Image 1: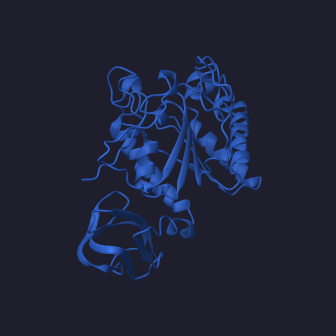
Image 2: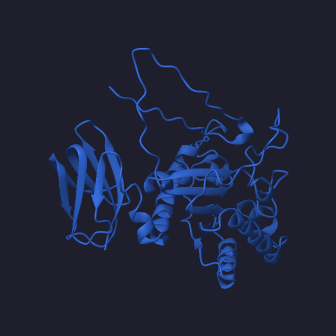
Image 3: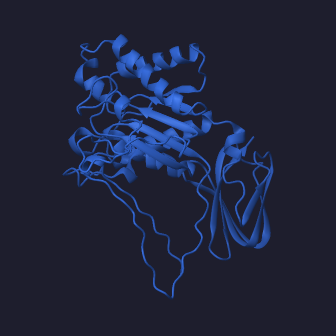
Length: 333
């Protein structure tokens, strides 16, 4: 029997840090080589919404759960790695903590008062280079003056452009997605961010986009998004990210592993799957997770005809006789 261990820190940095020091196994047991990490890499900059603050409702921080927040949901939808740089109450030009995102974005630990404070608290951006960066900020700026007008549109826009410039300097080739706030129904914040994105594009950076989250239904602690909002926002963001990535970049995600190969991808009609082991079944689903085709196999080679399905992005799951599964994004065009 095989077991997969997954460790998730569900609370924010002000609740304390976690350090994984390893674990011991019985002498009669052995560790297996893990599956390769997904090729697609995402990174998120945000506030309490991104952190999963109070998302389960009830007392906080007991109700915090980053695993149920939209970044984790989007990453699972896309079969992607992800990093989250977020802190409740943080802002672009004004927030509740003593620091802004421009001060925190490159730290390994957010709190400057953390004891003992690490001697080197600067993140090395070459250690993890995302394909897509999502910036979901502005909720706290809105609540602390931008909505009422005491923070001007010009001041917020200048601060936002400066932050995007910092992120762009760290990741010259990343796609950057700037979002509205699912907590704010007034369109002022989203429209301003959209205008900033237009200005950045006009200045020559065409890898910057604006995405509009659906407004939250609520259910989280202190007026925050609930678990269903994390699902809704995560899945809609995943669909949008899929749409802006080039066909070649999506098609190459995990296109080959030690035991599965698929081709051609993108595909017009028939997709072929080969395995080192006997394939037991293949399963095709859309990005919402709905299974649209399930096929039993008993061979090292299988095929699936996509001619009857509309063009778009699908997820193919193949499982071999050892119980090993492989999930691959497939482009039908």
